[in-house]
Image (cartoon, rainbow, N blue to C red):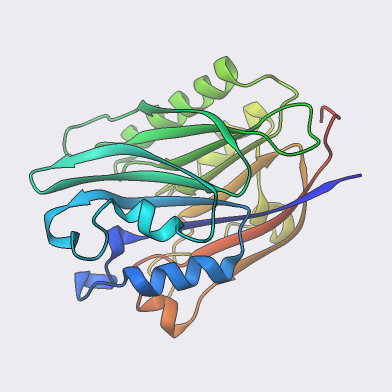
Length: 250
């Protein structure tokens, strides 16, 4: 029988609203709980910050994952004088192995690939999940996409299921061309013919956030956009319901 997984991705903007006007971490926690994701990909999440200590002393990823997910891993990317931030993956299924690969092209923008292997009950292979937040400069993104492509080629069995999600900053819509080399397809592109509008949250115009998958069928996908969400972050949240077929290489 196929297994259904609910997947979501959200750039938390370090727990701040658009234009950094106020802290929104509590609202973000309510949002991601409502998404009811089995696996959640988060970007720009603070592991530590002096100004945010009273809100999440042990790191925002601990605070946001409370009471919702049994497993959470954090990849530290950007180091600042007052703290650090990076990507996180939350899962309701066991994360059996994970690694954060540095793909920074500049000290100005420190980036990483957070790669987790997740044991889905009844599946004979681990699900490989990679959370990404790529650079703003086109030449940096190209090299980072090549690094992502290389990592999947080296580290993931060819018949293993894969989900890659996050903020691609892919203004020129080039990521899908590269990721198709690994048989990865974007869920909104499959369902609606084009990527979802996700930035800025007040009036989404740019198609920057993505969910790519391999070894799944897309049952449904949704852009979570509302006035409340627009006041939580500068990105909207995306989700997808994927049907996977365990024990069958696709």
